[in-house]
Amino acid sequence: MEKAITRFAPSPTGYIHIGNVRSAIYPYLVAKQTGGKMILRIEDTDQARYVEGATELIEDTLKWLGIDWDEGPIIGGDHGPYFQTERKEHYVEWAKKLIAAGRAYADPTSPEQIEAYREECRKNNVPFLYRNYRPENTPEWEPGMPLRFKTDPKDYSWHDEVMGDMKTGPEVLDDIILIKKDGLPTYNFAHIVDDAEMGITHIMRGVEYLSSTPNYLAIYEALGIEHPKFVSLPHILAPQGNKKLGKRDGAKSVTEYRDDGVLPEAMLNYLACLGWNDGSEQEIYTKDELIEKFSIDRIQTSGARYDEVKLLWMNGQWIRRIADEEGIDALYSRTAGFWPESAKSYSDEYKTSVLSIIYDRLKTLSDLRTMTNYFFEDPTIDLSQIIDNKFLKKFSEAEIEDLLKKSIAKLSGVENWDENTLQDALNELLAETEKKPAELFSLIRLSLSFAPFSPALNLTLKVLGKDLSLARLNAVARTI
Image 1: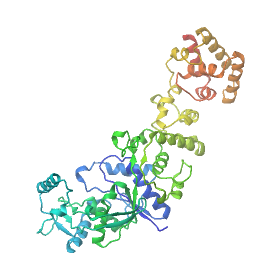
Image 2: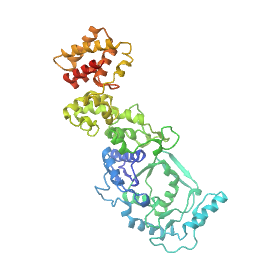
Image 3: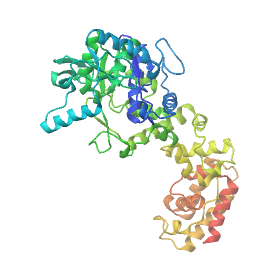
Image 4: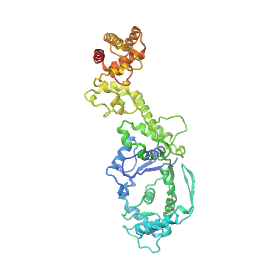
Protein backbone atom coordinates (compact mmCIF):
# COMPACT_ATOMS: atom_id res chain seq x y z
CA MET A 1 0.00 0.00 0.00
CA GLU A 2 1.18 3.52 -0.79
CA LYS A 3 2.41 5.66 2.08
CA ALA A 4 -0.68 7.51 3.24
CA ILE A 5 -0.57 11.16 4.25
CA THR A 6 -3.60 11.75 6.44
CA ARG A 7 -4.77 14.59 8.62
CA PHE A 8 -6.82 15.30 11.68
CA ALA A 9 -8.22 18.81 11.35
CA PRO A 10 -10.42 19.73 14.33
CA SER A 11 -11.91 23.12 15.10
CA PRO A 12 -11.00 24.62 18.50
CA THR A 13 -14.61 25.26 19.47
CA GLY A 14 -14.90 23.41 22.78
CA TYR A 15 -14.35 20.00 24.27
CA ILE A 16 -13.22 17.14 22.06
CA HIS A 17 -16.05 14.64 21.86
CA ILE A 18 -16.29 10.98 20.91
CA GLY A 19 -16.91 11.62 17.21
CA ASN A 20 -13.94 13.99 16.97
CA VAL A 21 -11.61 11.43 18.47
CA ARG A 22 -12.64 8.61 16.15
CA SER A 23 -11.92 10.98 13.26
CA ALA A 24 -8.37 11.17 14.61
CA ILE A 25 -7.92 7.45 15.30
CA TYR A 26 -8.69 6.17 11.81
CA PRO A 27 -6.30 8.49 9.92
CA TYR A 28 -3.65 7.75 12.55
CA LEU A 29 -4.00 3.98 12.01
CA VAL A 30 -3.86 4.30 8.23
CA ALA A 31 -0.78 6.54 8.37
CA LYS A 32 1.08 4.26 10.77
CA GLN A 33 0.12 1.10 8.92
CA THR A 34 1.51 2.38 5.62
CA GLY A 35 4.60 4.07 7.03
CA GLY A 36 3.18 7.47 6.11
CA LYS A 37 2.34 10.58 8.12
CA MET A 38 -0.55 12.08 10.02
CA ILE A 39 -0.73 15.86 10.12
CA LEU A 40 -2.53 17.77 12.87
CA ARG A 41 -4.10 20.94 11.49
CA ILE A 42 -6.20 23.36 13.52
CA GLU A 43 -9.12 24.74 11.52
CA ASP A 44 -9.71 27.96 13.44
CA THR A 45 -11.27 30.17 10.79
CA ASP A 46 -14.63 30.30 12.59
CA GLN A 47 -13.51 32.91 15.08
CA ALA A 48 -17.03 33.44 16.43
CA ARG A 49 -16.98 29.91 17.85
CA TYR A 50 -13.33 29.89 18.94
CA VAL A 51 -12.81 28.74 22.54
CA GLU A 52 -9.66 29.73 24.43
CA GLY A 53 -7.66 26.67 25.45
CA ALA A 54 -9.47 24.31 23.06
CA THR A 55 -6.36 23.70 20.95
CA GLU A 56 -4.37 22.69 24.01
CA LEU A 57 -7.21 20.37 25.02
CA ILE A 58 -7.11 18.71 21.59
CA GLU A 59 -3.36 18.21 21.83
CA ASP A 60 -3.57 16.89 25.38
CA THR A 61 -6.31 14.42 24.44
CA LEU A 62 -4.36 13.04 21.50
CA LYS A 63 -1.23 12.63 23.63
CA TRP A 64 -3.25 10.83 26.32
CA LEU A 65 -4.60 8.40 23.74
CA GLY A 66 -1.14 7.76 22.36
CA ILE A 67 -1.93 9.34 19.00
CA ASP A 68 1.26 11.10 18.01
CA TRP A 69 1.13 13.36 14.96
CA ASP A 70 4.06 13.64 12.56
CA GLU A 71 3.55 17.30 11.66
CA GLY A 72 1.59 20.03 13.31
CA PRO A 73 1.53 22.37 16.30
CA ILE A 74 4.27 21.90 18.88
CA ILE A 75 6.48 19.69 16.68
CA GLY A 76 6.38 21.69 13.42
CA GLY A 77 7.11 20.15 10.03
CA ASP A 78 7.53 20.90 6.33
CA HIS A 79 3.98 22.06 5.62
CA GLY A 80 3.28 24.72 8.23
CA PRO A 81 1.79 26.89 9.45
CA TYR A 82 -0.70 24.46 10.98
CA PHE A 83 -3.28 27.02 12.13
CA GLN A 84 -5.54 28.18 9.32
CA THR A 85 -5.61 31.75 10.64
CA GLU A 86 -1.85 31.82 9.98
CA ARG A 87 -2.30 30.68 6.35
CA LYS A 88 -4.37 33.58 5.01
CA GLU A 89 -1.92 34.45 2.27
CA HIS A 90 -2.07 30.87 0.98
CA TYR A 91 -5.83 31.11 0.46
CA VAL A 92 -5.56 34.50 -1.22
CA GLU A 93 -2.97 33.12 -3.64
CA TRP A 94 -5.24 30.22 -4.65
CA ALA A 95 -8.27 32.52 -4.78
CA LYS A 96 -6.52 34.75 -7.29
CA LYS A 97 -6.04 31.71 -9.54
CA LEU A 98 -9.79 31.18 -9.58
CA ILE A 99 -10.45 34.87 -10.21
CA ALA A 100 -7.99 34.88 -13.13
CA ALA A 101 -9.73 31.83 -14.58
CA GLY A 102 -13.12 33.51 -14.26
CA ARG A 103 -14.23 31.00 -11.63
CA ALA A 104 -14.60 33.34 -8.62
CA TYR A 105 -16.06 36.78 -8.13
CA ALA A 106 -16.47 39.46 -5.48
CA ASP A 107 -19.97 39.42 -4.03
CA PRO A 108 -21.37 42.93 -3.34
CA THR A 109 -24.83 41.65 -2.36
CA SER A 110 -25.92 42.64 1.15
CA PRO A 111 -27.01 39.99 3.68
CA GLU A 112 -30.46 41.61 3.69
CA GLN A 113 -30.79 41.18 -0.07
CA ILE A 114 -29.67 37.54 0.15
CA GLU A 115 -32.31 36.91 2.81
CA ALA A 116 -34.90 38.48 0.51
CA TYR A 117 -33.88 36.03 -2.22
CA ARG A 118 -34.27 33.17 0.26
CA GLU A 119 -37.73 34.37 1.25
CA GLU A 120 -38.74 34.56 -2.40
CA CYS A 121 -37.70 30.92 -2.86
CA ARG A 122 -39.61 29.89 0.24
CA LYS A 123 -42.76 31.53 -1.06
CA ASN A 124 -42.34 29.81 -4.43
CA ASN A 125 -41.48 26.51 -2.74
CA VAL A 126 -38.24 26.09 -4.68
CA PRO A 127 -34.70 25.47 -3.37
CA PHE A 128 -32.58 28.56 -2.86
CA LEU A 129 -29.50 28.56 -5.11
CA TYR A 130 -27.40 31.69 -5.08
CA ARG A 131 -26.20 31.01 -8.61
CA ASN A 132 -29.69 31.92 -9.81
CA TYR A 133 -29.15 35.42 -8.37
CA ARG A 134 -25.53 35.83 -9.41
CA PRO A 135 -24.71 39.55 -9.92
CA GLU A 136 -23.98 40.53 -13.51
CA ASN A 137 -21.42 43.24 -12.85
CA THR A 138 -19.13 42.60 -9.91
CA PRO A 139 -16.35 44.80 -8.56
CA GLU A 140 -12.71 43.76 -8.50
CA TRP A 141 -12.18 41.58 -5.48
CA GLU A 142 -10.00 42.68 -2.60
CA PRO A 143 -9.71 41.43 1.01
CA GLY A 144 -12.64 42.62 3.08
CA MET A 145 -15.16 41.56 0.45
CA PRO A 146 -16.82 38.14 0.26
CA LEU A 147 -15.49 35.99 -2.58
CA ARG A 148 -17.75 33.40 -4.20
CA PHE A 149 -17.01 30.45 -6.44
CA LYS A 150 -18.58 30.66 -9.90
CA THR A 151 -19.89 27.16 -10.36
CA ASP A 152 -20.54 25.37 -13.63
CA PRO A 153 -23.52 23.14 -12.79
CA LYS A 154 -23.18 19.62 -14.19
CA ASP A 155 -23.21 15.96 -13.21
CA TYR A 156 -20.49 14.64 -10.93
CA SER A 157 -19.50 11.11 -10.05
CA TRP A 158 -16.83 9.93 -7.64
CA HIS A 159 -15.76 6.98 -5.56
CA ASP A 160 -15.90 6.93 -1.78
CA GLU A 161 -13.69 4.29 -0.15
CA VAL A 162 -16.47 3.40 2.31
CA MET A 163 -19.72 4.31 0.56
CA GLY A 164 -18.73 3.16 -2.92
CA ASP A 165 -19.53 4.85 -6.23
CA MET A 166 -21.51 8.06 -5.90
CA LYS A 167 -23.08 10.46 -8.40
CA THR A 168 -25.19 13.57 -8.37
CA GLY A 169 -26.81 16.04 -10.74
CA PRO A 170 -26.28 19.77 -11.32
CA GLU A 171 -29.09 20.77 -8.96
CA VAL A 172 -26.77 20.53 -5.90
CA LEU A 173 -24.06 22.82 -7.27
CA ASP A 174 -24.01 26.42 -6.10
CA ASP A 175 -21.89 29.55 -5.87
CA ILE A 176 -20.53 28.92 -2.40
CA ILE A 177 -18.48 31.44 -0.45
CA LEU A 178 -14.73 30.88 -0.58
CA ILE A 179 -13.47 33.77 1.52
CA LYS A 180 -15.60 35.64 4.03
CA LYS A 181 -15.85 39.35 4.65
CA ASP A 182 -13.41 39.02 7.58
CA GLY A 183 -10.73 37.82 5.17
CA LEU A 184 -10.76 34.24 6.43
CA PRO A 185 -11.69 31.32 4.19
CA THR A 186 -14.65 29.03 4.67
CA TYR A 187 -14.09 25.37 5.41
CA ASN A 188 -15.27 24.61 1.87
CA PHE A 189 -12.23 26.37 0.40
CA ALA A 190 -9.60 26.20 3.12
CA HIS A 191 -9.50 22.42 3.50
CA ILE A 192 -9.05 21.97 -0.26
CA VAL A 193 -6.10 24.37 -0.35
CA ASP A 194 -4.51 22.95 2.78
CA ASP A 195 -4.91 19.33 1.72
CA ALA A 196 -3.37 20.10 -1.67
CA GLU A 197 -0.39 21.93 -0.18
CA MET A 198 0.17 19.31 2.50
CA GLY A 199 -0.02 16.37 0.10
CA ILE A 200 -2.95 14.68 1.83
CA THR A 201 -3.79 11.34 0.21
CA HIS A 202 -6.83 10.35 2.30
CA ILE A 203 -9.56 12.61 3.68
CA MET A 204 -11.29 10.78 6.52
CA ARG A 205 -14.31 12.64 7.87
CA GLY A 206 -17.95 12.22 8.82
CA VAL A 207 -20.49 11.00 6.30
CA GLU A 208 -22.36 14.31 6.68
CA TYR A 209 -19.85 15.85 4.23
CA LEU A 210 -21.02 13.60 1.38
CA SER A 211 -23.72 16.08 0.33
CA SER A 212 -21.10 18.83 -0.07
CA THR A 213 -18.68 16.71 -2.08
CA PRO A 214 -19.96 17.83 -5.53
CA ASN A 215 -19.15 21.44 -4.66
CA TYR A 216 -15.71 20.35 -3.50
CA LEU A 217 -15.18 18.43 -6.74
CA ALA A 218 -16.08 21.54 -8.72
CA ILE A 219 -13.42 23.55 -6.87
CA TYR A 220 -10.79 20.82 -7.32
CA GLU A 221 -11.58 20.80 -11.01
CA ALA A 222 -11.42 24.58 -11.34
CA LEU A 223 -8.03 24.63 -9.57
CA GLY A 224 -6.71 21.80 -11.71
CA ILE A 225 -5.76 19.61 -8.78
CA GLU A 226 -6.50 15.95 -8.15
CA HIS A 227 -8.62 15.26 -5.11
CA PRO A 228 -7.46 12.85 -2.38
CA LYS A 229 -9.29 9.62 -1.63
CA PHE A 230 -12.56 10.26 0.18
CA VAL A 231 -13.22 8.08 3.24
CA SER A 232 -16.64 8.82 4.76
CA LEU A 233 -17.05 7.65 8.35
CA PRO A 234 -20.50 6.53 9.50
CA HIS A 235 -22.26 8.49 12.21
CA ILE A 236 -21.86 7.53 15.84
CA LEU A 237 -25.46 7.12 16.93
CA ALA A 238 -27.18 7.79 20.24
CA PRO A 239 -27.69 4.70 22.44
CA GLN A 240 -31.23 4.28 21.09
CA GLY A 241 -29.83 4.14 17.56
CA ASN A 242 -32.33 6.68 16.23
CA LYS A 243 -30.13 9.76 15.72
CA LYS A 244 -26.60 11.08 15.68
CA LEU A 245 -24.96 11.10 19.11
CA GLY A 246 -25.07 14.50 20.82
CA LYS A 247 -24.45 16.09 24.21
CA ARG A 248 -28.07 15.58 25.20
CA ASP A 249 -27.66 11.83 24.82
CA GLY A 250 -25.31 11.65 27.79
CA ALA A 251 -22.07 11.31 25.87
CA LYS A 252 -19.29 12.96 27.81
CA SER A 253 -16.14 14.54 26.51
CA VAL A 254 -13.07 12.36 26.29
CA THR A 255 -11.55 14.42 29.10
CA GLU A 256 -14.47 13.59 31.38
CA TYR A 257 -14.01 9.88 30.69
CA ARG A 258 -10.32 10.22 31.50
CA ASP A 259 -11.16 12.00 34.77
CA ASP A 260 -13.62 9.21 35.59
CA GLY A 261 -10.86 6.61 35.34
CA VAL A 262 -11.23 5.27 31.82
CA LEU A 263 -7.86 4.11 30.48
CA PRO A 264 -6.54 5.46 27.17
CA GLU A 265 -6.03 1.92 25.87
CA ALA A 266 -9.71 1.18 26.44
CA MET A 267 -10.93 4.42 24.86
CA LEU A 268 -8.71 3.90 21.80
CA ASN A 269 -9.80 0.26 21.54
CA TYR A 270 -13.51 1.05 21.89
CA LEU A 271 -13.63 3.96 19.46
CA ALA A 272 -11.56 2.16 16.83
CA CYS A 273 -14.11 -0.67 16.89
CA LEU A 274 -17.09 1.69 16.81
CA GLY A 275 -17.91 1.30 13.14
CA TRP A 276 -15.10 -1.10 12.21
CA ASN A 277 -14.18 -4.73 12.77
CA ASP A 278 -11.68 -7.07 11.21
CA GLY A 279 -14.21 -9.82 10.62
CA SER A 280 -13.18 -11.82 13.69
CA GLU A 281 -14.68 -12.22 17.16
CA GLN A 282 -11.79 -10.33 18.75
CA GLU A 283 -12.81 -7.35 20.90
CA ILE A 284 -9.67 -6.36 22.82
CA TYR A 285 -6.95 -4.80 20.66
CA THR A 286 -3.69 -3.14 21.57
CA LYS A 287 -2.67 -0.10 19.58
CA ASP A 288 -0.11 -2.18 17.68
CA GLU A 289 -2.77 -4.76 16.81
CA LEU A 290 -5.07 -2.01 15.54
CA ILE A 291 -2.29 -0.61 13.37
CA GLU A 292 -1.63 -4.06 11.96
CA LYS A 293 -5.24 -5.12 11.35
CA PHE A 294 -7.10 -1.92 10.49
CA SER A 295 -8.38 -1.62 6.93
CA ILE A 296 -10.60 0.98 5.31
CA ASP A 297 -12.63 -1.67 3.50
CA ARG A 298 -13.84 -3.03 6.86
CA ILE A 299 -15.37 0.30 7.93
CA GLN A 300 -19.12 -0.22 8.06
CA THR A 301 -21.46 1.95 6.02
CA SER A 302 -24.23 2.17 8.62
CA GLY A 303 -24.16 4.18 11.82
CA ALA A 304 -22.53 2.70 14.91
CA ARG A 305 -24.52 2.88 18.14
CA TYR A 306 -22.67 4.32 21.11
CA ASP A 307 -22.78 2.01 24.13
CA GLU A 308 -21.21 3.32 27.32
CA VAL A 309 -21.84 -0.01 29.07
CA LYS A 310 -19.62 -1.68 26.45
CA LEU A 311 -16.95 0.99 26.94
CA LEU A 312 -16.90 0.42 30.71
CA TRP A 313 -16.80 -3.36 30.22
CA MET A 314 -13.83 -2.92 27.91
CA ASN A 315 -12.17 -0.63 30.43
CA GLY A 316 -12.51 -3.32 33.08
CA GLN A 317 -10.88 -5.79 30.71
CA TRP A 318 -7.97 -3.41 30.19
CA ILE A 319 -7.56 -2.83 33.94
CA ARG A 320 -7.22 -6.58 34.44
CA ARG A 321 -4.95 -6.97 31.43
CA ILE A 322 -2.50 -4.35 32.67
CA ALA A 323 -2.44 -5.84 36.18
CA ASP A 324 -2.03 -9.40 34.93
CA GLU A 325 0.47 -8.76 32.14
CA GLU A 326 2.45 -5.72 33.33
CA GLY A 327 2.07 -6.25 37.06
CA ILE A 328 0.09 -4.64 39.83
CA ASP A 329 2.72 -1.90 40.23
CA ALA A 330 2.10 -0.83 36.61
CA LEU A 331 -1.61 -0.51 37.32
CA TYR A 332 -1.00 1.25 40.63
CA SER A 333 1.09 3.90 38.86
CA ARG A 334 -2.09 5.00 37.07
CA THR A 335 -4.31 5.31 40.14
CA ALA A 336 -3.11 8.65 41.54
CA GLY A 337 -6.10 10.87 42.23
CA PHE A 338 -8.63 8.03 42.25
CA TRP A 339 -8.31 6.85 45.86
CA PRO A 340 -10.71 7.93 48.62
CA GLU A 341 -9.69 10.93 50.70
CA SER A 342 -9.09 8.65 53.68
CA ALA A 343 -6.29 6.86 51.79
CA LYS A 344 -3.98 9.89 51.75
CA SER A 345 -2.06 8.96 54.88
CA TYR A 346 -1.45 5.36 53.82
CA SER A 347 1.68 4.09 52.12
CA ASP A 348 1.99 3.17 48.48
CA GLU A 349 2.79 -0.36 49.59
CA TYR A 350 -0.48 -0.69 51.50
CA LYS A 351 -2.57 0.83 48.70
CA THR A 352 -0.89 -1.50 46.22
CA SER A 353 -1.90 -4.45 48.38
CA VAL A 354 -5.49 -3.17 48.41
CA LEU A 355 -5.42 -2.73 44.64
CA SER A 356 -4.05 -6.25 44.18
CA ILE A 357 -7.21 -7.82 45.61
CA ILE A 358 -9.79 -5.36 44.26
CA TYR A 359 -8.67 -4.60 40.68
CA ASP A 360 -10.62 -7.43 39.09
CA ARG A 361 -13.87 -5.79 40.25
CA LEU A 362 -13.10 -2.34 38.86
CA LYS A 363 -14.87 -0.95 35.81
CA THR A 364 -13.08 2.39 36.10
CA LEU A 365 -10.28 3.61 38.34
CA SER A 366 -12.71 6.02 40.00
CA ASP A 367 -14.48 2.95 41.46
CA LEU A 368 -11.59 2.89 43.96
CA ARG A 369 -13.17 5.85 45.73
CA THR A 370 -16.30 3.91 46.64
CA MET A 371 -15.04 0.33 46.75
CA THR A 372 -12.05 0.66 49.07
CA ASN A 373 -13.13 3.04 51.84
CA TYR A 374 -13.24 0.32 54.51
CA PHE A 375 -9.55 -0.41 53.97
CA PHE A 376 -8.68 3.08 55.15
CA GLU A 377 -11.29 3.93 57.80
CA ASP A 378 -13.53 1.95 60.11
CA PRO A 379 -16.96 1.53 58.56
CA THR A 380 -20.08 2.65 60.40
CA ILE A 381 -21.61 -0.37 62.12
CA ASP A 382 -25.04 -1.00 60.65
CA LEU A 383 -26.58 -4.12 62.18
CA SER A 384 -29.53 -3.96 59.78
CA GLN A 385 -27.21 -5.02 56.99
CA ILE A 386 -26.47 -8.21 58.94
CA ILE A 387 -29.97 -8.87 60.25
CA ASP A 388 -31.61 -8.27 56.85
CA ASN A 389 -29.00 -10.14 54.84
CA LYS A 390 -30.68 -12.88 52.81
CA PHE A 391 -28.25 -15.49 54.16
CA LEU A 392 -28.38 -14.35 57.80
CA LYS A 393 -31.95 -13.21 58.46
CA LYS A 394 -32.97 -16.72 59.57
CA PHE A 395 -30.57 -16.49 62.54
CA SER A 396 -31.43 -14.86 65.87
CA GLU A 397 -29.21 -12.10 67.23
CA ALA A 398 -27.94 -14.56 69.84
CA GLU A 399 -26.93 -17.01 67.11
CA ILE A 400 -25.20 -14.26 65.16
CA GLU A 401 -23.32 -13.15 68.28
CA ASP A 402 -22.28 -16.75 68.96
CA LEU A 403 -21.01 -17.17 65.38
CA LEU A 404 -19.02 -13.95 65.65
CA LYS A 405 -17.41 -15.02 68.93
CA LYS A 406 -16.43 -18.39 67.47
CA SER A 407 -14.98 -16.60 64.42
CA ILE A 408 -12.99 -14.24 66.64
CA ALA A 409 -11.64 -17.15 68.69
CA LYS A 410 -10.62 -19.07 65.58
CA LEU A 411 -8.93 -16.14 63.87
CA SER A 412 -7.19 -15.06 67.06
CA GLY A 413 -5.29 -18.34 66.96
CA VAL A 414 -3.94 -17.79 63.45
CA GLU A 415 -0.24 -17.02 63.71
CA ASN A 416 0.85 -16.84 60.07
CA TRP A 417 -1.56 -14.19 58.78
CA ASP A 418 -1.30 -15.11 55.11
CA GLU A 419 -4.00 -15.95 52.60
CA ASN A 420 -3.45 -19.73 52.62
CA THR A 421 -3.38 -20.08 56.40
CA LEU A 422 -6.42 -17.82 56.70
CA GLN A 423 -8.32 -19.89 54.14
CA ASP A 424 -7.50 -23.06 56.06
CA ALA A 425 -8.77 -21.46 59.29
CA LEU A 426 -11.98 -20.34 57.59
CA ASN A 427 -12.56 -23.83 56.20
CA GLU A 428 -12.05 -25.33 59.67
CA LEU A 429 -14.48 -22.77 61.08
CA LEU A 430 -17.09 -23.87 58.53
CA ALA A 431 -16.76 -27.46 59.67
CA GLU A 432 -16.85 -26.55 63.37
CA THR A 433 -19.95 -24.34 63.09
CA GLU A 434 -21.65 -26.53 60.49
CA LYS A 435 -22.65 -23.42 58.56
CA LYS A 436 -22.70 -22.79 54.82
CA PRO A 437 -19.98 -20.54 53.33
CA ALA A 438 -22.60 -18.00 52.24
CA GLU A 439 -23.83 -17.73 55.83
CA LEU A 440 -20.61 -17.67 57.82
CA PHE A 441 -18.51 -15.74 55.34
CA SER A 442 -21.25 -13.14 54.76
CA LEU A 443 -21.31 -12.45 58.49
CA ILE A 444 -17.55 -11.99 58.74
CA ARG A 445 -17.34 -9.98 55.50
CA LEU A 446 -20.10 -7.57 56.54
CA SER A 447 -18.61 -7.14 60.02
CA LEU A 448 -15.29 -6.18 58.46
CA SER A 449 -16.53 -3.83 55.73
CA PHE A 450 -20.29 -3.14 55.82
CA ALA A 451 -19.88 -2.86 52.05
CA PRO A 452 -22.14 -4.34 49.34
CA PHE A 453 -19.28 -6.57 48.22
CA SER A 454 -15.63 -7.15 48.92
CA PRO A 455 -12.82 -9.35 47.65
CA ALA A 456 -12.31 -12.95 48.77
CA LEU A 457 -12.57 -13.07 52.55
CA ASN A 458 -9.11 -14.50 53.19
CA LEU A 459 -7.58 -11.75 51.03
CA THR A 460 -9.56 -9.01 52.78
CA LEU A 461 -8.41 -10.32 56.17
CA LYS A 462 -4.82 -10.49 54.99
CA VAL A 463 -4.73 -6.90 53.75
CA LEU A 464 -6.56 -5.46 56.76
CA GLY A 465 -4.17 -7.27 59.09
CA LYS A 466 -4.84 -9.33 62.19
CA ASP A 467 -5.21 -6.53 64.74
CA LEU A 468 -7.63 -4.43 62.69
CA SER A 469 -9.67 -7.44 61.56
CA LEU A 470 -10.17 -8.70 65.12
CA ALA A 471 -10.91 -5.20 66.41
CA ARG A 472 -13.72 -4.77 63.87
CA LEU A 473 -15.21 -8.19 64.59
CA ASN A 474 -15.14 -7.49 68.33
CA ALA A 475 -16.78 -4.09 67.84
CA VAL A 476 -19.70 -5.67 65.99
CA ALA A 477 -20.01 -8.48 68.58
CA ARG A 478 -20.25 -5.91 71.39
CA THR A 479 -22.98 -4.05 69.50
CA ILE A 480 -25.33 -6.99 69.08
